[in-house]
Length: 233
Image (cartoon, rainbow, N blue to C red; front, side, top):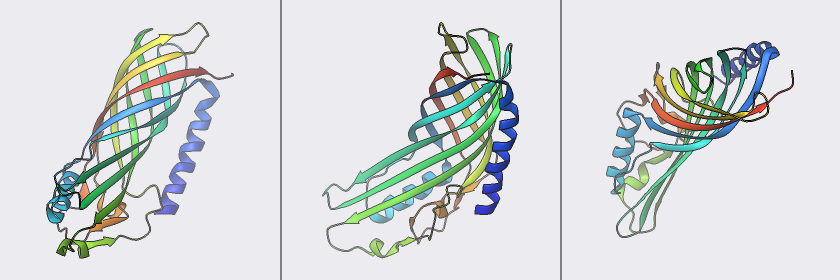
């Protein structure tokens, strides 16, 4: 699997570097995403119920987005990616048990934006996504049967564990600055997953008694604020 995705990143780099001969700007900024992953939600519900903890969700994540835009006129090619991170926790009423679930979401994307007018655009992207998770369960009270069910899944140092593919629809506003090809983009998007990925084995630790579906589709909506920085031609 590591070799497969190393080749994927290498192909992506070579492919985009060819297009970058016509680059215009580097776009960097913060991003917020809200994820919908039904089977992962069921797993989290099972985990909290089995350990006697209040319910929790793993929807929100925050991070950074980066891309390079190329082309001239009203159509621009977009090549980039993003990394978002989320931390969610729940604590028992007596404060003796706690659960912290961390998530990392990494994606590579490429597609086109169409400027309907100079300040408004719509577009579409193809996505390759990756999910990873970390689990921290703690019980400082009397031992419970669920304590013995927390086990390791093995080495998940490969950031491409939990990979999938999807498409993105996006729209937003562009506010130009005085310098050519510089400005700020306020952009909203919706990601639609096209394949399931294995979230269960993407965690470092899991509750081993779980027998439900360990793969999920991943959809998300989000907002990003991108600062366009001119690049030399």
